[in-house]
Image 1 (cartoon, one colour):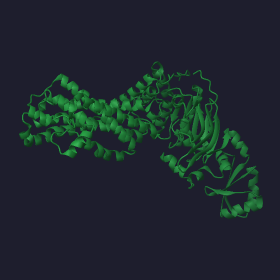
Image 2 (tube, rainbow over the protein chains, first blue to last red):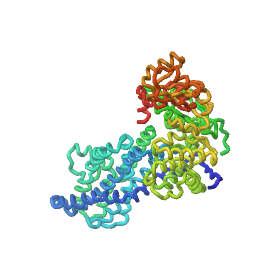
Image 3 (cartoon, one colour):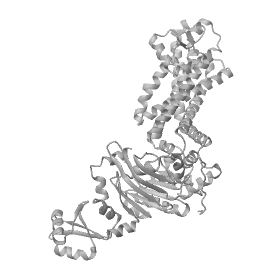
Image 4 (tube, rainbow over the protein chains, first blue to last red):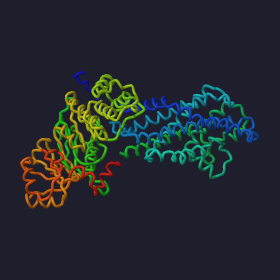
Length: 284
Length: 326
């Protein structure tokens, strides 16, 4: 045993320190993800079911109205978004487990901001969710979506952004839920409606008024719609099909541009993250 | 570490009120740099609340507290950089390895990367976990986990190490070994240790102790001085009729005795010399007698009028339950 003490220095705060903290929180998510094979596999089952079973089953009856596009092709971006939704929501809600097993405290008592820790968590959740969606992206060809490199990159970017938003939402939920038992009903109550009201599984055109309102206040709609636009831009379709399946989002008579849709998602990310930070900073 | 620090911990008029309970009722405290300071008392005495205020986890209702020269309310992060924390409840990630837990901590505390690896090895060697560093924490025993938490608390070379009930829930042998590590610490590190415990025997390991009961510090000195101040031996007898024995003690010897933990207990100046008189003059048959030199349990009893176990069992202290649920 040595008697010499290797005392270490800790520089005072600053942005660099905050980034290191966020980065190590992200690394922890990566380590845990790589160790959790069951989670990887199980999270892929649902989207594949949606795509091939729901999509395959419904395409026979909706074929009449879809013109030149297979229903499964229409469903593809929505299913991508859905797969990311559940993985990212789980990544955020996993903070309940961190609380239960005490690790949350280790993070919150460190001399760094809560914002740095939660940002690391969000980037971690978004990375994990996006990595998983790559498996689905690889299946694009089987449902008639071309392997266009730019489109694939755009989709990855949009998926990452959406996953960040949903992880932040998961964190906000986790700040309210104190026990693991209460976490699962929360997913059912909040996350599942987000999926059904986002236009991921049906087109936004010709919906009843109340449903139109609900889909338009759902931030996930603004993440799904750009993905669909990106995919449909590469398809060879006629105007009628496009109007039915990729009608875009309208605020009154104003057609919301793609850039504005993405901006809505970015703002939702910031808003949810800020709210989660405020709540976690207060919990101790 | 060239900072001049007057007191490692300095507390003045500290009060903490939760809605209906006054957990801490005005305490003053000075901890000298380099000492092991014990904070004793039954569960619910306010120890954990006090330590949480000192660690910047809970805000005081009134009063001030400085740790390593910084105010816990105003300079939160400055305090946090200078303290190590080991909580009652585990705070490790069981899915990560021991070393990964330390690496996480080092990054979170911004430990200089050029020295981080050497420091990790040093603290792991110190608690005897270097060989197990690549194993997931879920394969560790309770004692190993606590040692890893202590190593982690030391990783960023804190000036003050706070240990909140570091031996709770551990078997006696492991408890003894944890104290071994704490003593060893002082030989290796320039550090102040602030430790809470409700095991009176453990407090013998401290340089000075404060005894806390119902939110107040009732005694503060070295363990030796506290025991000396009692000045009396403790005599514990079991009898046929405890009530009659207490009455008889009062009548014959003018001694105030009380029943604690199922036996009649009282204090006299010279216990060994008193026993023959006791048998000669007490009207009640005696089954057994024991005479002990004062212990810290007696110190607690003398200052609070109750044994530490009775204090914990005793109802009427909703805070005991509250504090644990917190």
